[in-house]
Length: 470
Image (cartoon, rainbow, N blue to C red; front, side, top):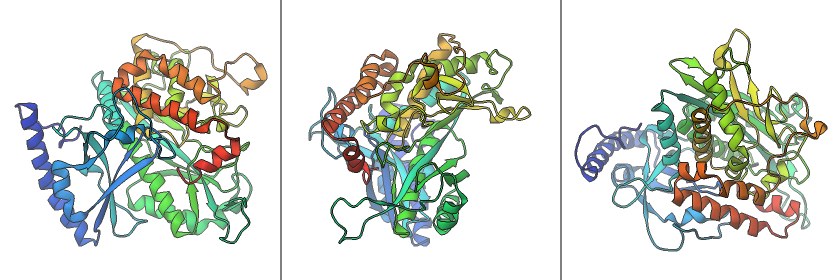
């Protein structure tokens, strides 16, 4: 837990909050001086809304101490914004009234290598009286992480981030001219790396300069499609990292005359962009995803994954949040369209990766059905909630599925549309209890708004509308 938010002194909550903010202001003065000495004069403060858009307010570096103490204002209405910046309303959130305080996490303050003169920090959102905002997604992820820690359990998580690098048609190109893909060489082909070597090298250098450990960077299946995988971390840090990774890639792309799109699909009918979540469960230094149980895991690890599998149809409304997400979630595309698990099965929504026999630490599970339009804080928190419920119920996994499930005809699909996922989400008492009613209802309103927004649009029109939004 962050010391700025959880002071050790005893006393009334309001007094504790004031003392914590004063300490944060003092620490921020030192940070601001160091940033200024490095010629960094602006700080981007980001949060991610329920439509998966990274929103921002920026401050001059000189304002960091005051911002660390008191935050900066922002309307809660952004929690019911849709992907096109239109608004809906929910039972608890909506309309022009109210204000929140955005408080930067100084532990995550990072100079931006691809944006000279700028730094970045994620924010936690608070009410005006200093109490945590009930619909803050980052607070939710932290709360679920703490719930697991209270049981002696540690989660290690990391995202694979896929994106499409494109160039825009010339200004005088005929209307309707398609975007052009950067590096259109073969899937996973070295030719694409050669063509884009300067671009990819700048991405690696920028991420390294920001202390993001990259595990892999490689071409993906579609033309212009690339993927980066980062090292596992605690859930909140993993979510922070995926935000920073995306915005770093976006900045490097712009400097190379490219557009990086993290939309679920760029070209309807083709393989889309995923945001696969890898996770492992630990206790007392032991990886519970490797054991001597029937499925090759410990009983606790198996129950955790079984809980996720049970809740996956409802979780899909969080991890595949747009109507266009279901253009990606098609069988036989390694997107995880089926409600099953399998050992090293890239068609299963939940893929178990046992790792080498002599390396128990590498065992983990991968959720393949999520895409980059998802809010990573919602994903990490909700997955933990589902897994813990599996442990409580002592669930076990069904037999694993081998091969492409579409060929058997017996493996059930996950929801094949956003309305289907919404229906499952709306009935999940587990997720309502975990998220809390204000956040749950806001997510529900945004998902229903996205359905209305997409109504009547052809698949490619859906994809085109999102290309520059994510």
